Length: 265
Ligand SMILES: Nc1ncnc2c1ncn2[C@@H]1O[C@H](COP(=O)(O)OP(=O)(O)OP(=O)(O)O)[C@@H](O)[C@H]1O
Ligand SMILES: [Mg+2]
Image (cartoon, rainbow, N blue to C red):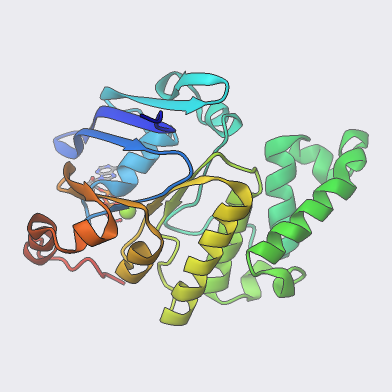
């Protein structure tokens, strides 16, 4: 059997009396699109925050298996996790609104991979040497992400759906092994969601990255996922292919009985 890229076992995370993630075990296989779905409050973002080390779970293990070996992610800082090739996007945008699309992606790449932010901003020698290659890489990434025409546009002036794509390109800029996506389609219209699906597939094909995707848009999840894990009230509910999950009675019941619809926005 193949080794999972990411292996979560018995992850447990509570906030005071609220158990957000309950004894959850999931394996994410390399090179796949793995979706994490579930009704509002299921614990999806909390789990992602445990993986990216924004939170530390009270129990459980999170292991990343890369070519350099098995890494205990709970022993790593958020910074070390990024160095291991784990990137993430946020449920809410975290961009430099006053900078262009190009500069947002270039800064993400330069700061994560080589020079310090000061070196980038003040053009210090080490940065200058690398700059040409970085600029070319950024142009190419924007092309793949469908953002080439917006490269010189200030982020603040772009529609929300396009800003979400910029955030995606920023995360891809570090050439991640594992990409954690928290609701990349939120706030997008149907046309934008469809385009996002194509872009995600393209980015994955060109980078070889594994995608762990939290998403409420079922058309997107169903069209691009290899595996879907369903969470409900913090716990594991089901896992399977899109076809298996679509007709799983427990999943249907969780969404219908959850009170809140899976399609929230
Ligand atoms: N920092 C926190 N402090 C206290 N409770 C929290 C915190 N973060 C999350 N929770 C609670 O943990 C539970 C899971 O929340 P989480 O945000 O992980 O759900 P989610 O599946 O991402 O939901 P959504 O689909 O609405 O984004 C919820 O009951 C939430 O209120
Ligand atoms: Mg969430």
